[in-house]
Length: 303
Ligand code: PAF
Image 1 (spheres, rainbow, N blue to C red):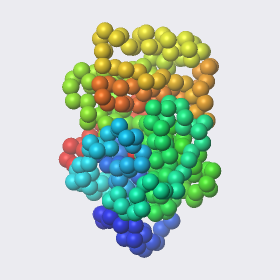
Image 2: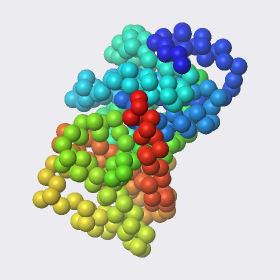
Image 3: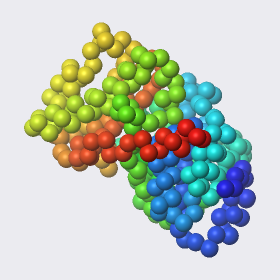
Image 4: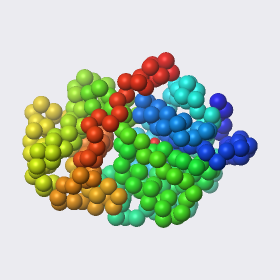
């Protein structure tokens, strides 16, 4: 496995490969079993796999966790090595933003996709994501790029950018990997240190599951299903540090809210557990626990 920091080195190595089957996994590092499953998907589809590790300042708000975002370089690189990654792109900030970020051409995704849900509490976030992803796609020029379904709004923004700008890449959505208690894998789970934080973090998935169960039992309106699911799941006296930011039902591509639940409706949740902001989602027609982290744990423990 090669690790390079510059665009020139990356392009030289990538262009020397006699293949049109390069799969790319962009990440911000702090790799966990969720990332491992993205890399495994890339490994299955691509004859060469490139992973980028870059904590992108452009997608963090001024009060967000950019500075304290975990950056465990050695662990990340050994996991990539074990997973059979061919090339890691590990740029420094001025490699991607040589003129700073004040005056920069950016990608502005359609407001209909970004003003609500995560975009409402994170202004500019999806502009930062779309801009860095377009830069990375231009640098790496992959045939396939893998993104997790856990960041559903991000996935919708990127898929739309690829379609609207005719980018020659196929986006592959990868299922969410969960802990055995249902908590979706996330680099931010590292912030959940106390047992009580962990217990409250599980509520996101439980809330989603309860909505799905009510739908399967015949409840048709979003309003009714949400009211009952919240009543069943969120007892304030038991979970004092759990602050629901949103619970929403949307069309999976347009991200517009729906009043009637349909099989392809996507249910999304965001909440703060103490200071940690967590998100999760599931499609009503998705098989329960699509992926389990079990098979991937051994890699992370040895990594
Ligand atoms: O999902 C992430 O880790 C980031 O948003 C991404 C896609 C790597 C862009 O910085």
